Length: 67
Image 1: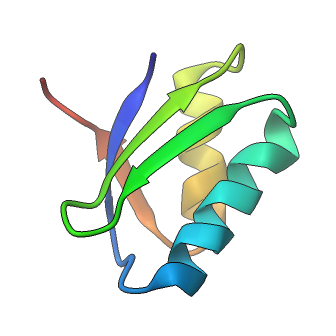
Image 2: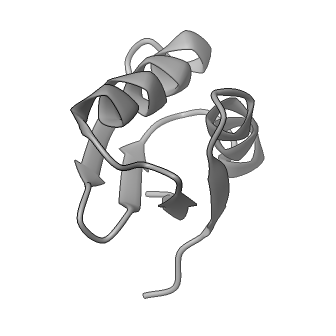
């Protein structure tokens, strides 16, 4: 399950925007977002780079999260 550290998320609107951007590339993805830490976990069939690109195109910076 790919995990990302996403910067720039500050509110529930941001959470919705990131979730929507991920669902645009994989409508079946299960997205878990921890707003205070900026951690995003995605259960998806899409490639991690595709997910990261979608988040970036939504206006946020996504980097692979470390364990």
